[in-house]
Length: 346
Image 1 (cartoon, rainbow, N blue to C red):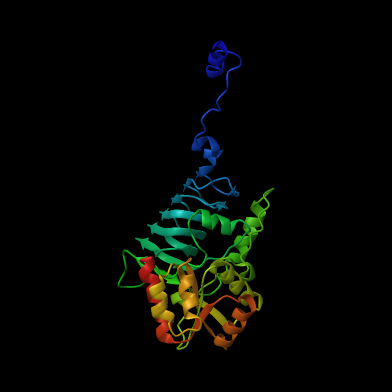
Image 2 (image 1 turned 120 degrees about the vertical axis):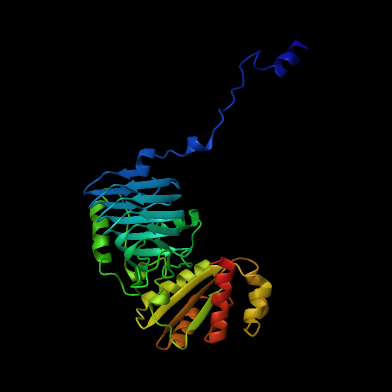
């Protein structure tokens, strides 16, 4: 009986069993919180490498003539009272808020962008929702340029996709009847080459292969509303598993150096089987498409250019054997884009 009591009460008889201390989420983070604030700097560079922010909120304020490059995903960031700065802000799960800034050049990936009391700003943007400006002027927007190895994973961690970008659909909360406060352009910004040089000069021992070259783009460089839409455009829609096919498609077109082919828009969203049937009932393998639509999001691109339909068809055959849709029917193209905006609540 004594032996039984000893076995039942091991902590009293013999060596006690040690329990591992409880581990909390904040014990695992190992984030240097001092790195989450960049403030009161004039000149030089502040670089945050992958893993240094870890999905936390950042604050940048009162900086002049400073390079601030954040190559990590974050919860969001407030940038206040900065002048003549260069910003790279990695994928943000929520809002990037620029306030009282002027003369800055920015490459930003985020769920939402808002500016207030800003002027003379260049912004190369990847944004899931409509960018919003307020009490701001001389704002120039172009599509996101910038890539490095960790970017794709960081976008996933932030709940973003490279194939949903509303950079060109800027909403001005304080419009002027005299002249617009912003402009959108499909042209490659002249300042991006200097931006890449500044990044490389600032990295020190960090190994980040940052590039603004089109051939290495993760986010398709779309023209959106910045370029007049041709009478005939081509829609291509990839079904589950869509992301890998879309990535190969974009890469193949860029590597072919087909300057006459332009990405107008890209969309990623989940489509119900009945919605798929309404849109693509006349397509080959329509039943297979319906089944695939129920398994995961679709990714669609609208393109235009010389021999666009032939180029799209040949590229699709080259990179994918899965069922997909290509169409140059204007009504079908518009119906797809309208459905995307409706389901994405844009």
